Image (tube, rainbow, N blue to C red; front, side, top):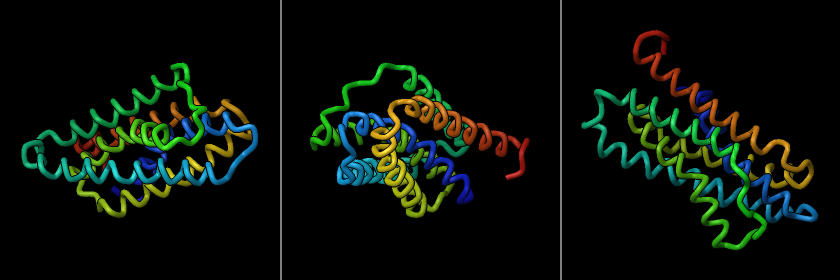
Length: 187
């Protein structure tokens, strides 16, 4: 997996965190940059930690799944992507408990579960995990912080579109990996 694909995955994974951050920004009467920074740190930290956990889980089971790993990767990325697209259609939960630690912890965990599954796929693809989690964490940090600012400035216009775009990106990467493995595309 090259750096561009890894960056595309990072963007796809960060879209749900971005959407939640936009919701956080909507709740603020005026922008508070410390909240944008805190949101970026929470979401970026969780998005970086979860693939690391998934990677080590995937390494444990790699020997059992090697024959079907491309199908597992394809399935996980498509399920994550479809879930993101479906989530974009749901009514937004209450996000206006602006920055309580409990709220931020729960939102960070909820938006990073898909990153756990991606970490498992990284184990099968033999991705440099520390580079990978760095790209994911930094990308999510930046996009989440920007999400708070954008939410405060522009409103909810971009939130569901971001989740849809992220879902489509993950599905397309899953299809590309499957087609490469089946020999229809050159790696």
